[in-house]
Image (cartoon, rainbow, N blue to C red; front, side, top):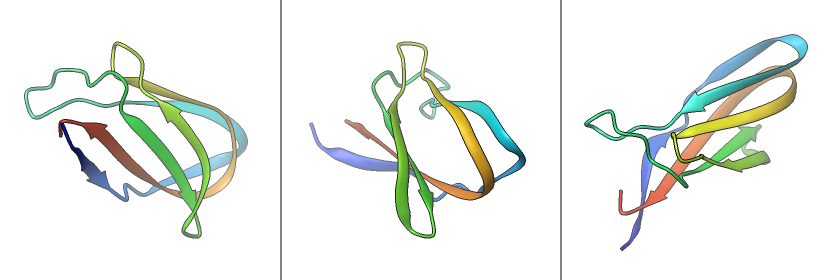
Length: 77
C-alpha cells in the first residue's frame, strides 16, 4: 500500500490559552481510519503529531492559543 494525503492543511484557530480537542478521521464512506497520522503545524513546522485510534479519533491535549494547520495521511489512501 502507499501513503496518500487525506486532507491538506486544515486551518483551525485555538481561542483559549490551553485547551484540548479531537478530530475524527474518516474516509469517503464516513468509516473511521484507524492509525492515520495527524500532524499539527504552526508556521509550517510540525509542533505535535498523533495517530488516530481504532475509532478514527485523534486527540490533542493542551494546545496553546494560535492558528494551526493539520496534515493527515494514512496508508492506502
